[in-house]
Image 1 (cartoon, one colour):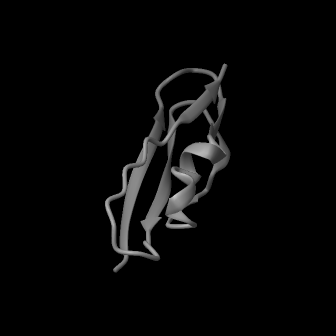
Image 2 (cartoon, rainbow, N blue to C red):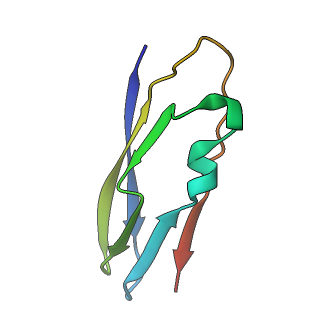
Length: 75
């Protein structure tokens, strides 16, 4: 199967900031393979703006999965 979700990251501050998803958190457990895809993984949000992030889950095997995505924000 395959499932896609779109999330929105919002900058309500008056200054721009950079964001990046932690690559290890996207990989998850070593047994998961490449089952999770995030696009974009890095970017800059201008003040009072937002951006969409597409998260696609496409497992290679049938098993239980658990991901804890870590989003790092600078500034």
